[in-house]
Image (cartoon, rainbow, N blue to C red):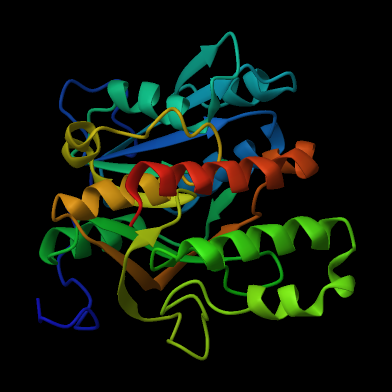
Length: 294
C-alpha cells in the first residue's frame, strides 16, 4: 500500500463465505451493529440491502432495538439470521451500540444507522483497505436521497465555530436566520479543512480526517472495546467526535474513503423530535469541549 491514501484499491478481498455468522461456531470477519428506534421501514430496507449486495465476506448482523413502538419487531422477524436485542427502554445511541458490540464476534465492527442502504458490495473493499493502510477508523462516502454528498467527516472544529453553526441551525429551523445574516455568514465557514466537500477536496477519493460519522463507521472491534467504546454520557450527537478523538490520542487515526458510497436518509429517528435535537446537539458539543478542550 502506498504512503498516500489515494493509491490503488486493495487487490485481495476476503474469500467468499456464507453471508451470516450468527449460527456458526467460527467468528465472522465483520459484525454489523445497528441501533434502531421507531424506524421499522427504513430498517427493513437497510437489512434487505445488506443481504442483497454483500458477498465474499463472512458477517453477522446485530440489531439493538431501543424500545420501538412501531412494527420493528415484526420487521426483524423477517430476518431470522439477525441477532436482535429488544431493550425495554430507550437507552440511546451510544449505550445501544456499546451493548450490541459486547455481543459482536467479528474482527471488524461496522456501526451502521438503520436509515442507510447499501447499494453495492462495499464491505470487502473497505475492510481490505483498512487492513492494508495505516488507518484504524474508516467512513465511506454517504449520499443523501437527492444524490448530493453528505458532510460526514472532517477535522475537529474550534469551539466558536461550532457554537455559531449550532445556533444558526437552530434559528434556521425556526425560520429566523434571515434576521441575522452575519451569523449565517459565519455558519457557512467550513468547520475544518475538509468540511467544504467540493471546493476543498474530491469526495470520491480517499482523505485522512480527524473524525467520521457514526452513521457508517468501520473499525476494529478490539479498538472499539479497548479504547473505551462510546461515552454513554453523550446520549445523542458528538458520540463519534468523542470516540474518534480518543482513538486519535491512542494513535488510531481516521480516513474518509470516498471510493464507495452508501445511501443515507439522514436523521430519520431524530425527525420525531426535531426541535429538541438541535438543543441536544449543542449540549453534546459543549460537553465534548468541556471534557477535552482540544
